Image 1 (cartoon, helix red, strand yellow):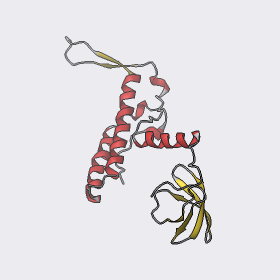
Image 2 (cartoon, helix red, strand yellow):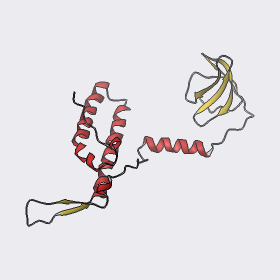
Image 3 (spheres, rainbow, N blue to C red):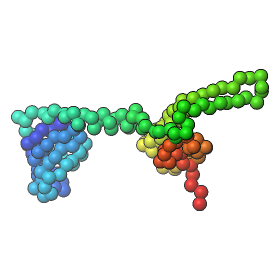
Image 4 (cartoon, one colour):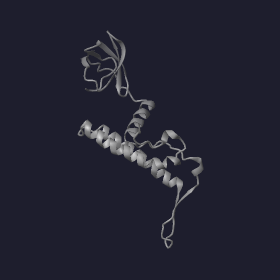
Length: 177
């Protein structure tokens, strides 16, 4: 459906005739005879244009609407990383990986660097889950089977929960009964 303007007369199978009173970024605010003021998404295919208002100017986006859309898109594509605090006792700490062979040097890694990689791994697992759940080509059974592997991966990572400051950020594997 083309972009409609304020003042356009429309018809909806449930609400009857109405007039568009506001053109938001993703929806129209419409006053209907049966139903009053209702917000309907622009993707809704139930609207039929009765009389277009060609004279009305197209609405411009507000900064708030642009921010809302950007946040949605960035969040959808996992570009907004949640700030996950490291447990206080680990701040400034170092991980030392000591080989069994005494001739080899130990490897030191700042805990913050390791923690950042753990959080990135968790975020990528979440994106993988979202992609699986929204996949159109996988059956529900295939989605459940793949989800079980992801749940087991979370379970394998619970050892690292000790690094998180808050329990809400912990890895959680399969619940045992």
